[in-house]
Image 1 (tube, rainbow, N blue to C red):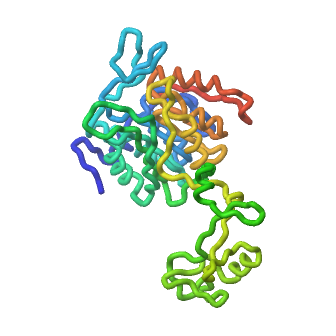
Image 2 (cartoon, helix red, strand yellow):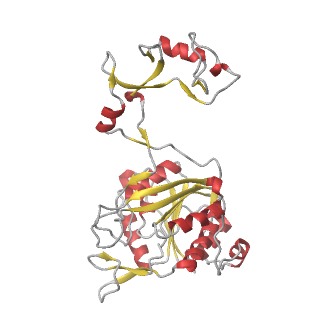
Image 3 (cartoon, rainbow, N blue to C red):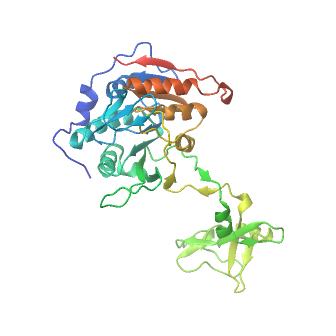
Length: 371
């Protein structure tokens, strides 16, 4: 599916006709870059040295709200500028203009991504469905990984004829079919343990059991063979070959029901945790340093899930620098881009505040202006 609108340019026109920012003394050996300027022109310039080298991208672009986001001495606000407030950034593009604004940048980001890279795009429910169609077109539907619901705040009692909104949306795509994936796990809660691991063995270890067979019938191969006089149910096959099942049985890892049905024991103390699902609860900071500042733990989670040490992480709408702080704390290299004076000021301050003893390397970075 392709979304069409009047001002939509071809990819070739975007890639060839977009002006290139001038960035002095930057090359592929430069690590940890903070760049101020128009991110579209800067992304075009970065192709010279970074094409195919970015391993993870997180972006939290404007949400087509048609408003100003301000920052004052003692508060962050989305209201109109007052005498004591500075505009951190304006989000005035809406409709087709916004979609093309975002599409241009996504095309360059795709070119910068390595074959193992993923991109997380944070957007809201009002525009997110259109953005997904754009991303299907740019990255390919086969590389769509997740539509993640992020719980952003506590319930609010706004007086409007609609359900309350406590969520936004993160779209996850990869560059290829084999992205970096570290299979993040969440710790079991006591409620999880009580609900999922109800059985206790003679040694006091909590466990549950799972079927020894799985969907899918095989006519050839060991997993379709008889074991202990039993064949898998119709339309299913053994999860493992009979010789493996026999070894599990000798080790006491198979539990037999009163009716003679075997099941595999799964002990909680051998599990790393539960698989992370596609509903996340990472609430925004209550007292943000910058408008729309995102949860630091969420960015750490994303970076740990989809990159490895010394990989290169990019955020071309870096705002208050949360992505850069998270990447630095986790030993990744990073590139951050923003046009806002206020964003650059806040980001520099946050990077300076990172304790040096948390890292194997100092928090050094190069600052450039894209002209």
